[in-house]
Length: 78
Image (cartoon, rainbow, N blue to C red; front, side, top):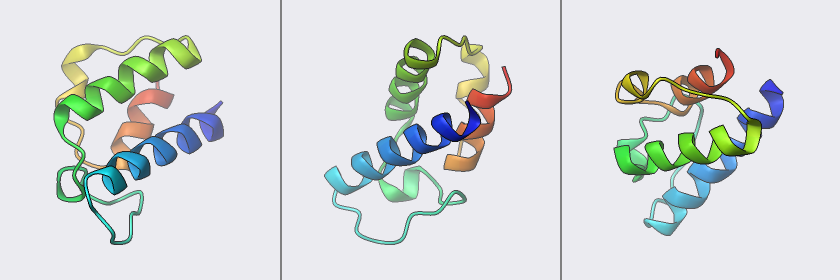
């Protein structure tokens, strides 16, 4: 399931970044804010992933997410 979650997060983050006009390289260590993905987007990604993968994430941990890698780690270590 880790690979599925990683692919889901990468695809979703890349889509949002492109919609916001970011055209640079996106890596797992990219700062989400710097590529146009804000905290509301992160919350929506988490909620969607919770439904899609039948997992639950503590809302208090979401606010600390800064990179795509941190987001994947949060979603895969439940």
